Length: 331
Image 1 (cartoon, rainbow, N blue to C red):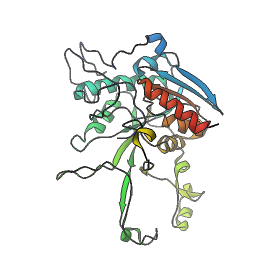
Image 2: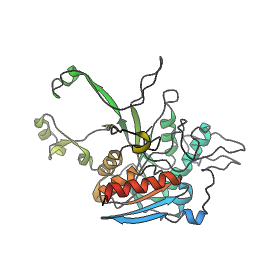
Image 3: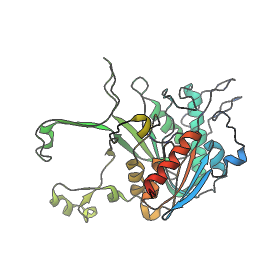
Image 4: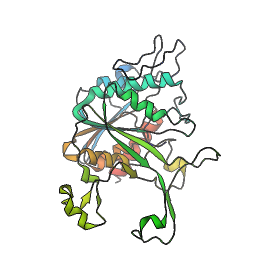
């Protein structure tokens, strides 16, 4: 998967389980079970206070160590303009602190809980950009997560994050000047006679009403044929809407342990592009409830936005704070 953001984790309840209700407006609950992460050593009150709080440039940063199901209810209602995050995918990724292989019903019930908590802090025209991936043997996870989100959000756009792409020279009609077919980007190869390599993940764009205006050309691309710009009223700056296919590869790294010490993180360009699409003029404070290595915070700082982040794992939290300071205030 991707994403720098993993915080709250559910645990397997020892008692009865119930299948989540899909397609209704009722909360999904598990009778007799305790959803959420394993208990942390800190009290509920201490989880609801920022562990780290500082300012760099125009941006104020608040980082919470704890369970987002405990932290989000303590945030002011309607205080967040945009959320960009990537929760655990429940595909068996090996994290330091939490399990990633819950029974599906428990995972979706936990998803319902944190999404409802997130919806409470959103402003009426906020955006939630939710990155969810899958694995070839279980491709339904992102779609089921999106179905659960229907309980409290409207699905306004579906963006496809393309991590690697193969381009045939002939298909470009010479526009790129390619001398041969090329493949660019990074992905995790699989050895299978049934499945192709998975080079894509979803970024679901949810909003409270489905009517949130966007700054589409803020992440637009130039018209290759300039004559096309004159045909469209939206083409005054020579750019067109990028569309819902975003090619954003990972940066090449030399050491996984040193350069990307989290098993599932996304590039900072993803949250930066999401914020620009939402519209920087309508952003003040943004949130990532699954902070991971802090790439959403880095993107927010580069754009002069205030940031709130939540992370369950103390090691990842400290790493994120260090990376934010190094990226934005390297002196």
